[in-house]
Structures are given as C-alpha cells and as structure tokens.
Image (tube, rainbow, N blue to C red):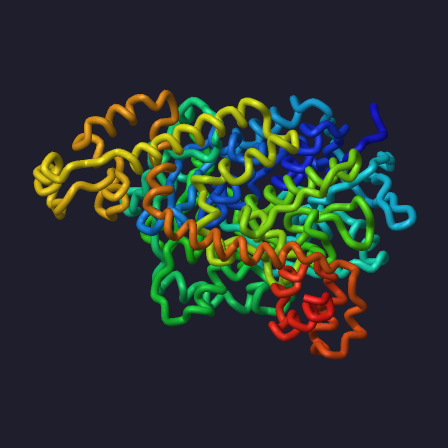
Length: 624
C-alpha cells in the first residue's frame, strides 16, 4: 500500500472523479478517497446529465479530455436536444442515464486509469504546515502524504437530512456525513456557510396509470455528448412522462406547511432558487393552479421513477397524500420519500481562478463545497482543479479558462469574483459570449489547448483536425460555388420559396433562414456530391458548417467584443495595490477589492459594487 502521492482527491462524486482522472492522466500519482466504492459518481438527484447551459459544460468537459460525456453516452436511455426552436447558441443537449450503469461505467474508468488508486474511507483532517497542505488523515487514522489535495465533498460536510420534523445525519440517504474538515478549515480562517438542496420522491412505475400521462419521447439522431467516434446508443431507449398537480394537491401541501422544515424554522440555510421544492412553488406562486411534473426512468429495465418537479421535505404521509390526488398517481407506491439536506460550503471568493485556496497552498476546492449545484457544474470544476493540482506538483503555467473560452470559465469566474448567496446554477444568460460558446463547437474551442496540455490524447486531436478541415472545405466550397438563377428558380418556386433575380454564390442561399444545406443538396448536384464525399461524421460536419455560415456575422461581431474585453484581461493588477489606502474609490470598492484581490482589471470590473469610475481610478494609477 502506498502512502505518498502527488495528488489526493477527497470524494468520488462528479467533481472528484473528473479531478482524479485528470491528474492521473496527466501523469500525477493520484489517490481517490471515497466513502463507498459502490457509489462512485452516484447521481444523487435526477438520473440525467445536461440541460440548458449544463449540456454545454459537458461538451466542454469532453472536448478537454474529461470523462462525463463518454460515460453519459454509454449509459443513455434517452437523448434530447433542448431549445431547438431557438438559435444554436441556445441548443443544449440533455440525456437520461441508467443510474446503475453510470456508476459501473465510471468505476470501470477509475479502476483502470493508470496512476490512480482508490481508498475506501473518509477524511477527517488535513495535514497542513506553514499554510501548505501536505496530506490527509482518514477515519481509520491512516495518514496519506500528498503534494496537493482536492476537496470535492459534495453535500457530506456536516450533512443533515430533513423529512418533516425527522432529522437524520448524512450526506445522502443511507450514507454517513463527514465531520472534522469544516471545523479545521474554519479555524484556519476560511468562511464557512450552510446551504440546502433537496430531492424528490422515487416512485414504483408499476403503480402509475401511464395511460393518463403525456409521453415525452427522446430523439435518435446523430447528436450526443462526446466528440469521440463511438457506436450508436447501445441501451434500450425509454420515454419520460408528464403529469400535472391540481388544486387538491396544493391544498394538501398548504395544510402541511406547518410541518415543513422550510417554513417552521427547522431549516435556516438557502436552497436553489431555480430548482425549488413543491412547497416553495405553491407559496411563491399562489395563483398557479397546476405545476408540471416529469416521471423520469432511473434505468433501462428498472421500475424506479424519479418525479422531477416534486422535490420536498414534507412528512412522508403528506407527500403521499398529495401525490395520490394526481389522477395518474392515485394508486402510487413509493420506494422512498423526498427529503432536504443541509451541508457546509465555503465562500468561493476565497479561491483563485485555478480553484486553489488563497489561505492554504496546493489545496483545491471543487463542486458543491464552492456553493454550486448540479453534476455538470461540479464536474467542470473538478476537471480544472485536477489539472491545476497536477501542475502545482510538476510545474507549468496555471490552467485557467476565460469567459470567452468556455462556460466552465464563466462558472469559475462568477464564483471567485462574485461569490454566491444561493446555490449557483449555470444558465446561458450568465455567459456574455454565448454565441461563441455553443455546444457544437466546444471541441474547436478547447481540444487543441487540452492536447498541448497532455490531457486530450492523439486520437481526439486527430478527430478535431479532420473535422476542422472538412468544415472549412465545405464552407469554402459554398463561398466559391456560383449558382445561376435559371438553373434553380424552378426548384425554389416548387418549394414555395422566393426565386433568384440573378446568380449568387451557394453561400448566399444557405444564409437564407428557410434554407439549409440538406434542403439545397437535391437542388445542387455539386453540393450533394460534396456531402457524399465526407467520409465520417457527416451530419456533425454539415451542421457545424451551416452554423458557421448562417451566423457568421453574429459570431464575428461577438468575437470583436470579446477581443476588446480581453485587453482588460491582460492588465494584471494582483498584489499591485494597497486598496484600503486608495481614498479616491468608494469604501465598498476598497473593501471588496482588498478581499478578492482580483487578477486583472477585467475581473475587478466584474465584482458587484465596483463602478466604472472605480475602474478608471485604477487605470489612472497604473498610468493608463
């Protein structure tokens, strides 16, 4: 048994697994410590990956050489591309996964990754000397030495579950909480707080009247999460089903509010605004007569269903009575009730953009410990923390993603610059460059950088090069191929479209909103031949080329804005000012700048409460 490592990762959730694999794949001798090896990458809440903005994060993780997209594709039982009615900047992939197979697939990856060992235990203490982490002490009183440590404790730090007035210590149902680390870190000066999340009831599908629900089928086209070339989806594809609450359901819930930990003072911490409990919904929206609920299958063959939209911490009898008032659930049987959980988190403004803590060197935080919510947000942070933990051991430039490079960059910059006052969830609206940060081009944005780092391997890089060449060739063909009006007008008119007045380039036809490459291909033989010559991943390449053509003006304009802002990103100010002595800026600005100590002028400008005049003062002091 080894007791000395380069990197130790504490916690084998979505953040921990990505962190451990990243560090190990880059060459660090890595140890992953987890409570339960049978719960590696457990989907604690819904059995799904992706969604609005979250799907973009998963594609970025994959483009960087991470594992979440690969695992999701291999365990998918339904796939959908959300927001298709909007522009491609808003398209977001989402997949239902087989929960058990998701764990199996992740465990197989972790167990077969070179340089990576697993230890089943919990960590009760960090070994810290001279403000530098040097290892961990486990519950079995085993000391492991390390050059850097990544904490990804999820909801386990002093975790406390609530079902009505019943309180159960734990980090997840039937799993123990973790104690000791919060108290140690608080004694070192870290700011610690409490947050709350919840999970819905799990339902026995045999008790559901599916003929009284609305079926929601998946899609079966070429879209997936990973950019790697895999076989089509292997598992049986399953539908989700929707039902609605009604006034009878709401009345039962209202009568139960005095027993709700959220409303009787039992829970004081803050829950996720955008994933509220059912009791919060009826209080926040008292005039709404119904709320949509989604029955989501937990696996390929299981009868267990997750009731999305019915998160609750009410007593079991109230949850059950309310559910039975939904017609399709009148005979419902449940496997376990919904519950709320409170846990410790640490103010993320105590972190650098590498996710290293400011107070203790080579100690990294990733996931819900930073006040975020969601598997995808956790995994993105874990990947960045694992990369930087490796770099801190072996040297190299810190790995930081900018806001114009990735949603992961937006996520981390928001955390370390603005902090959180509620569980942070990613949305497309948080990204000012979302036309650049599309789900279709994550590989174009990030894979080359990951390849230079050593995380993306040669096979992935070659796929990128081939795709880029094929896309560029198709775009160039469209730019140069001329079409005479007389040869295509009949076909355009037959399709109910405006005829041409004169000859144009093929590019100009593709730009039309009502036309696309596949619609034009039967009309233009040369285009059809060009498409037929694409050797592999044809649909993916055609879609990428079409987006590049149709939205070129928007993309170029947003890139110009990003380039202008990046000039402010290049003006480094970390440790250059004694902010408390600068009387020309506001008191609020002095306090926040001193606390966060931003890296650049651009980061300083994003801190809430910092005004443009404050930024101008700093630029003047810099001689700009």
